[in-house]
Length: 344
Ligand code: KG4
Ligand code: ZN
Image (cartoon, rainbow, N blue to C red):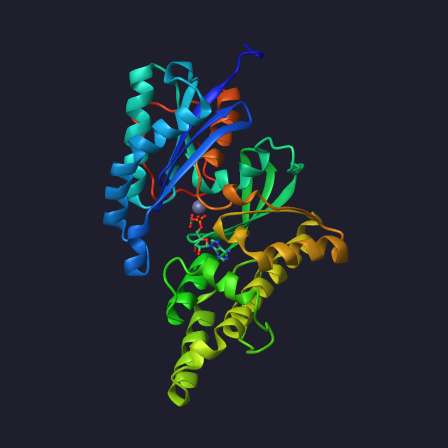
């Protein structure tokens, strides 16, 4: 049994990306993602449209993942899927698909918590990526979440702090929307920020106790600032976009880094792993690299393709759960609110 090769097909459909991956043990053989362009027109994810697009995408995406991996579905050991958290209509598509396929193939089904997967993505085997050692601190920064988590083991995680309002990805996306940039605006703020002066415009940072975060005040102050400046100069955004983006990004990164420093002080743990879409941000990446030198931290940044939503991260959790024979029954249902520390 120990020497058998475990092939996991993983499905991710919690938000607006339909993704399928095939893993052989901890190695990713394929990781295919269909991103839904339709939401750009609306400035945010429209849940009803997301679930319809998942329905259209899921069969071709799974086929592609199997083809790319050169694996026949009869070789699969188990199907892993995202049970939650996420949008109900989106989760339902992946959950129903995974249940039917597992039933049809007569193989185990494994449910995965999306946020846990963002953290455990660090355990995907890759020769260019080192793996964190337990215990470590994980900061999950995405469009739906902002958390600092104490990771004691694969399945023993404790949330030390989280956002009280907007997630950090939302702070990026909503700021971008104020600047007239299309959804999702996070990557565009990042791109423009790299050419701008981060000290151009100071924005106030929130005063939140402990390890919790708040981003809604920042968004409001950016909105007022832009309204004020565009009253006297209607071209203000166009003329200063790079400096505005650099200033917003600097403020957001400082907020994240200050809380991380506090978490390191509080726990005495200086191994830091990040996960979630915002880990792709160049500002957080360089701030962490600087902290390695300046503070002696060891930092772990996921490979770009494992930062944003993807099925490979669901697959690694699937594999780790397969090893423990932690399987899910066919009566499982999607769970849009699904806390990280919940027992399952
Ligand atoms: O993890 P993810 O793909 O989906 C969620 O689970 O939310 O994260 C998406 C978020 C979006 O808010 C997007 O704007 C943000 O990640 N994001 C970025 C960057 N790349 C993606 N934010 C800032 N800079 C980036 N380079
Ligand atoms: Zn995510």
